[in-house]
Each structure stands twice: as C-alpha cells, then as structure tokens.
Length: 117
Image (tube, rainbow, N blue to C red; front, side, top):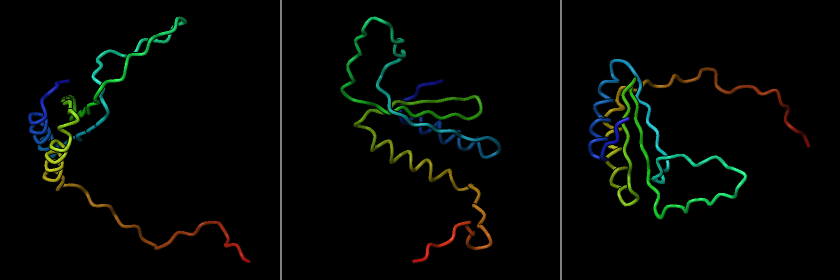
C-alpha cells in the first residue's frame, strides 16, 4: 500500500476512477486513525498499562482498484479542505452510475390484520 499526501491521493483517486470505467470497482474506506503502526499486545496475566490516548485523532482513507492500493492520512485541521476536494472528485466521476429500476405493483401486502377497536 502506498501512503500519499492528500493532493497526490486525490489525483491518483481520479485516475483510478478513470481506469475503472472500462472494468473494475474502486473501493474506498475511511476510518479513525490514532497514529499507531503496531497492534496492541495480547492481554496477559500481569496487569498491562494502556497507552494514553492520542492528543488528536487523524483520519485514514484507503482506496483500492484491482490490486492497486493507495492511502492517505488526514490531520484534524485539514479535514474540511480535504472533504471539499474529495467531494469534487466523486461528483466528477460518478456520471456513469446505473439508475435503479423502479418497483412495479404499488404497495405490498403484509400478512397482518388491522386492529379494530
């Protein structure tokens, strides 16, 4: 997985969307990131001291197309700026989405009877 800065990530994400037009799907995940690169140790019989929580959480964004993976880490102060640029990339590349088929037949019957008073 390649860790990129925010602008490079958005540029590469746009190129991924372009490549996915012929075949493939772009999977995007976002999650809270506290900066640790190693997992927590397994609990043992001895009391373990938990690490203090970070002063500021970050956001980890990953994208995958076939076997190519990219990622970026967003600081809390840059979230608004990144979100605006991210939305622009999504809007410009979501023009080929399939429309949902409308359901025919109106309402469905449920097996319940209405309660009478």
